[in-house]
Image 1 (cartoon, rainbow, N blue to C red):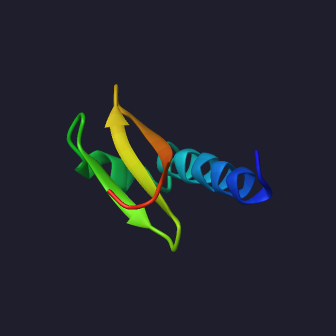
Image 2: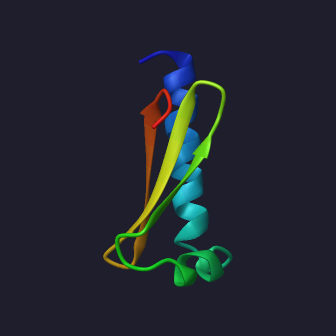
Length: 64
């Protein structure tokens, strides 16, 4: 795994912790089960999905 991939994985983990914690509760509560949104960086896309009441963050290559 490259250093960029490691950094993106770390960022995804931090976002998941944030959204599943008390500060991110407001965002997570507004998503319906299975609903998702994306954030795009220069080379990657982070997809945030609400599954079983929790935020799941995935790093995707390229653009959707």
